Amino acid sequence: MTATLQHARNLRESKGAKGTPLLSAGGRGRHAPAMTHEDAAKMICAVLGSEAIQDSVQTVQSMRSLKADFQGQHLERREASHHLPPPELGIRREHDVVEALASVLRFFGREQEYRRRLEVHDGREHEIYAVFEVEYPQHYASLTVGLRNVFRETWTFGKRSGSRNEQIRRAREYQLREISEVLKLGSEPYKQ
Image (cartoon, rainbow, N blue to C red; front, side):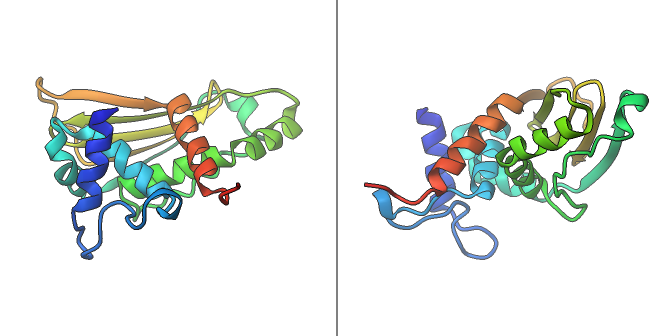
């Protein structure tokens, strides 16, 4: 937990390309700004992609510069998937890794609505999965979201080096879902 707080402090105190902090900054306590989906995505990138805590700013800036490459939607079971609506992630080719990951966090915020739409189509419950992986120190990232045994959508960012010294860290759907839930709670108006 201490490392995560230090990553947040590093990003909040650093100035990005536009001269603003890399994380939302402002008041304290109930006057502090709510964390945005982009803030959460930057934190995930900093935690997963940094070799050391002091690297968080450089890691986020480096990862934001990675070129997106859409690997496509792959059908895993044609007969079952032709009538199921794919998840509407909202990721576009011009998005960087932070924007893409923020889109996935937003998707998990409306996951129940998507699940209801799936059940209307075939009356079954489907398993939604997601994997966000970061290889470092070269900062290659991949993001996959899909329905287990039906289809998946994959995006990659940067180029894989193929060297033997890379390390991989990942976040899975249950972690991204939990972060999305916390973001929803943080955006609710303060109640006394």
